[in-house]
Amino acid sequence: MSFLTFSLIQTHLFWEDKQANLEMLTKKIESIKEKTQVVILPEMFTTGFSMQPHLFAETIDGTSVEWMKEIAAKHKIILCGSLMIEENGHYYNRIIWTLPNGNLGFYDKRHCFRYAGEDKHYTAGNKKLIAQVNGFKINLQICYDLRFPVWARQEKDNLYDILIYVANWPEKRNYAWKSLLVARAIENQCYVIAVNRVGVDGNNINHSGDSMIISPLGEVVYHKAFDEDIFTFTIDKKVIDEIREQFPFWKDVDDFFIK
Image (cartoon, rainbow, N blue to C red; front, side, top):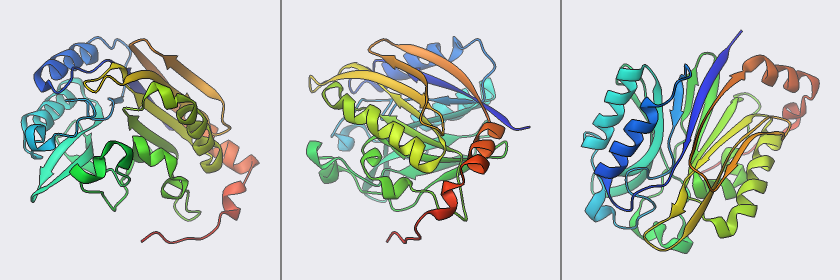
């Protein structure tokens, strides 16, 4: 039997204030009473969705990633969220997957949000990160990636079990957010875990949260709008395997290649 427990932190973020966000998130993580294995934070959890990486980006050895390592080690969890990272003269919106032993995995957002000018400030990634924990394979993606189903599409010879999105998705487009999350779960026959922020950011854009957990059948297991919340949920891999055995749609997926 394989189980994996996730804690989702839906929260307001202090605009471009790393120290305030790290202090706030430390308290929220320490408040989790349930035994958990993976804690998920929103996109750009140190700053909000800022287009000023030249002012706020850090290297992979910076204080925010060190904070992630310390929290993961102290609480014996995997800590996951995205932040601005500078590397070789480029800026990335990067998910850091932080293990309790200090090892890191990372994924750079492939689809930069042109509507907000993200493509002018950040470099797009070109590699997926499929993390493996307790027999689960986990595909990690960021916000605007949600609009591009091919990037998330299952490959029948390499199925993943859980698709995670971290986001700063605005309230005025939350219908698309909720609809596409359900679609990604159904078409990939996987759990989808989506963690969005709440509150108004420095550009006066409101975020409704609408963090969700969705089953491989498209059933909404958890949904929270507008309020800050911490939710813990355990996924049973047997549920995923049984659904795929009963409905073997994955065997008929189209072969494709992404450049």
